[in-house]
Each structure stands twice: as C-alpha cells, then as structure tokens.
Length: 396
Image (tube, rainbow, N blue to C red):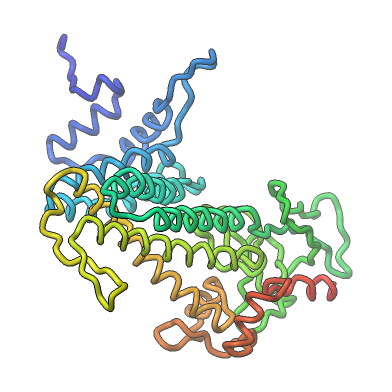
C-alpha cells in the first residue's frame, strides 16, 4: 500500500520488528536474535486489556495469559481427529519449552508464572470438562461426583498450605572475631518480602577456611553468607529455604522443611483425583465390562470421535492421564528422597561429587540417613521438619 510492505498481522501490531520477522520467515532466512528480542519486547508492551474504570488499558503478562488461551484451544483441536490428538499432544511440550526459552531470552532472570498458569489452567479445564460433559452422559452416580469434588477441594487445600508456608529465612551477617566492622566493609542484610513463616537468623561471614560443612550440605554460596545447615538459596525466591528440596515451577514456590509434607500430600491427592476422574470418564464414554462383580474397566471404545461431546471427554481424560503419569514419576522420586532423608538439592550436589549409586538415586555416606522407618517418622512427626535450624541457633 503506497509502496510500503503490509500483511494481515499489521491489524494487530504495526511495528518494524514484526515486518522484519515475517519477511525473514517467508524468505526462509534465519531471524536475527536482535529482531526476536525487539519483537518480544513490543508484544509484551502492547498486549493489553481495556478497562472500564478510566485507568486505560492494563498490561497483561504473556506468561500468564498464554496458557489460558493455549490449553483450551489445544484440547478443542485435539477433538477433531486421532491424528490431531497425537499432533497436539506432541506440540504442547514443544511449545512449553519454546515459550520458556523465549521468555528467558526476553526477561533474562525474571521469574515467570507460565508453568503455574499452565498447570492451574489444565486442572481447571479438566474439572470443567468432567462436570459439564462427562456428567452429562448421566452415567456417573451422585456419590461419585461428590467424591471427585471432595478430592479436588482437598488437593487445592494442600496446595494452599504448600504455597502459604515455604519457610523463607531472613539472613543477616555477623562479623568474624577480630574483624573490625566499618561503614565501607559492612555487608548488607539479605532483604526479603515479609512472610508469616519467615525467620530471622544471624550468621557469620564465611570463607573456605571457615566452612565446616561435612558430606554434601545443600547450602549454596549465594552472596557472602552461609545459611543454616541443610538450607539452600533460591534465586527465584531470592531467599534461603530451610532444608530446601527444590523450587517447584508448577506451583511457583520453594519446597522446604515447613511445606514438604503438604507438597507430598498435594501430589498424592492429584494422583488419586486424576486417576479416579479418568476412570469415571473412560468407563462412561466407552462400553465398560464388569470384573469380579464390582470393578468396571472400559472395553469398547470405537466411537470416541463420533461427536464433540465424546471426543472432548476422551481427549481431556487422556491429557489428564498423561499428567497423572508424570506426577507418579515425580512422586516415586520424592519417595526415594524421603526414604534416605536427602533433598533433591543435596542429591544433585552429591552427583557432582560422584557420591551416588543406583543410577544416581541413592546418596552414599549420608549422615542424615537414619534408616527407612526413622526417616519417614522424622518427615511426618518432626516439628522442625528435618531441619537443623534450632541446633544452629543454639550453636550461635
């Protein structure tokens, strides 16, 4: 138009970065990294939602909005044909990896809610499909529906407890003996957001000579401070976590001593709820067969794509079954860690030192391992949550 290049996407975004990107794509040429960075910056700035309160358009975070749009769209496309189902389920993990890499490129080390939004959207979408479509077949009994609702609420309750109490620690530094503190060499205390479960601990500056860490301690050398025994520094939370296991991106919180039990219970309820809902769905849309006069299993599933109602139930149940399978693997991994009283953070450091066996799942020479029964009793009953914070405070 008037000698200028134009394309249909110019309706949404009239910018040079978009023009250059699609020109390169249409010409089958590589897109420069600078163009991709500029395009991501423009999209992040112009993705806005209008409001009616006189405040103008509000910016929408792409990492939150994208899963809300992608997950339902993929489930709908997967209902069209079995080939589309396989293509969509192959596309989703590729999209997750690609989006995360692009986000890291554009936002550097900024934390993202993409995985949390994806997981929450997937759970809510699966529940809505079950209540609106599976129940519509009138094959699921009332007590079965109430059972699914109860287990779902229980899972969200444990998830709430996990996110509420990550046991963040406020770390302050204490000078070593013989070290005169001046304004120029005075280190600053670690600043954190206020948290009801956070603790304030004063610790000494650490050098390699001062460190008395034995075996593999999960303390990391972030900053110039050494946390309490078995604590670890999380770059995403920007805080030390008591007995840090890992930072779970799917719920956007760190797993430590105070919330590890609730995290394990949330995983267990996810597996039970998802498995039961999938079983009800498959025995509803497929002709079931009774075994042992009490247990139903799907038998005839030839008409799964006959109509939208059946196909959306099948695709969503299959999507949920994949999620449950992945959660089972994670649950077994957590079971192995707790059984030997080691965190994933510590186990990863042990792998780096070659102090593992059985394919890297068992830590060798672990002084925290007191036997299977004792480890599980400490995990469930210990008020300190397997933490050495109290002993560390007494030592100071």
